[in-house]
Image 1 (tube, one colour):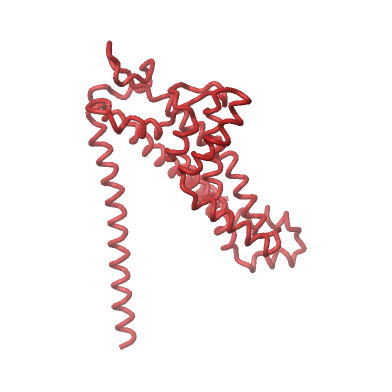
Image 2 (cartoon, rainbow, N blue to C red):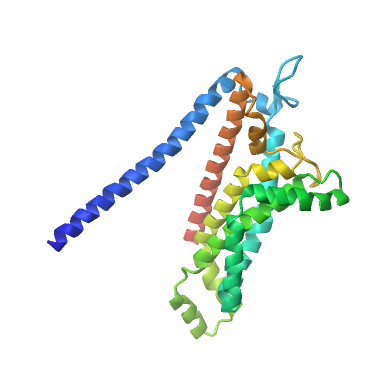
Length: 291
């Protein structure tokens, strides 16, 4: 009787997992379908080339033809994300390593609680802090203060706890037998980290980096508040910029017809960027596994 009960429960669990998997896949497919359906009018009438070759972003000009250049906003999105990841990734990894292998237990617990608190702060609070605290500091260095550097620094604070927490969870899965074996061989702590811990944790660390990057790519409110919202390709860190997500948030409320469809093209570009990141992560993970 126990075997039959266990088999029945296993079947229920299996079908439940299948249903959850189908539901999750269906939601993703519906999102992609919705973006494609809303973007098609602009893609058919305007074409992809004009999103690159148009001289500016002028979707509602009184005279002449509307212009829909997305390159400056795409560049701002990529540069702000790259800058934030370059700072937050090593900082998050070092934080996780410190908590697991160097910090006293009390200090490690305190640091984890602080990181968890940072992860729970709403993005608008980060943006508000950046606007009233960070922007005035940057304004004294190079007006107007709302610029690409402000966006990078705010995004760094936002994705740092995500990367640190996931990296810490990955390091916690390293088998103690491996660490004990390294200690038995007389390896130093740094040698153990470099030769045992980091290679084994590499796939999980890549996932932490990917999730942090995707949060930076999709962030809207914070960058809208601190980046200046000027449509231009930045030539320095102190230039004001506008990201794709900020552009959608600013203009979707009043956009109509062709203009609205172009904003959905922006969303489709963000979706394509996320898919590209996932593909790169899988390729890197495969390469790490082979090594």
